[in-house]
Length: 88
Length: 132
Image 1: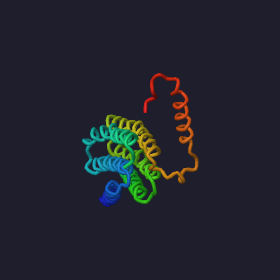
Image 2 (image 1 turned 90 degrees about the vertical axis):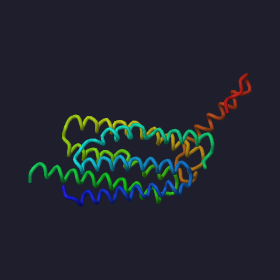
Image 3 (image 1 turned 90 degrees about the horizontal axis):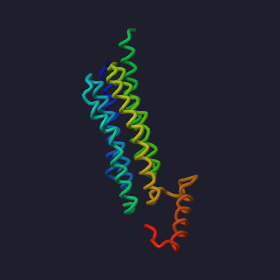
Image 4 (image 1 turned 180 degrees about the vertical axis):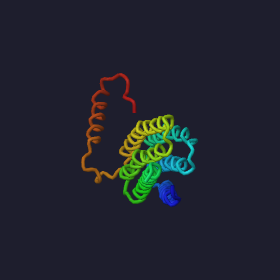
């Protein structure tokens, strides 16, 4: 497969990750940060998949599986904490 | 035009589409006004973008064991993404992150009022005070 496909994919994923990091840094509330970090984790899973296609191996599958299965725990914990303590 | 070339083109399109959905979610995360709208944007790569990337992997590595793991990843993501979205949306509504004017229909407000009225009506007869 030609190189430029992977260059485009890398640029798009990097831009998405940078935007998520900006939202994590800026806030304004802790829930916005949590949503942004969820989205950053999704971008990381997608990047791991794209890397497997580029290098032609399947070693990242287990990590992708674990991340997909446990990514929701952080959001649930933070949401429960916020429900009791207030927004900021 | 042989099979490998067709599969490579399909794989490339799937990868670019999945990455583009991630970028769209990033733009929505930056530009949308409140937490619920941002959550709406970030759910796009969570299922569909991941589906495209997984389809690209399956097209390149056509073995049953790989496809089975990929299906498991997709099922786990589809099971757990709604849980976190539900909890975050609920917490956002109750802590006032959502702007009240931005909702056209608000069914949760009525439900919360009814629940609180039930607690107030029951409390004088109860020997135990209601949990706060």
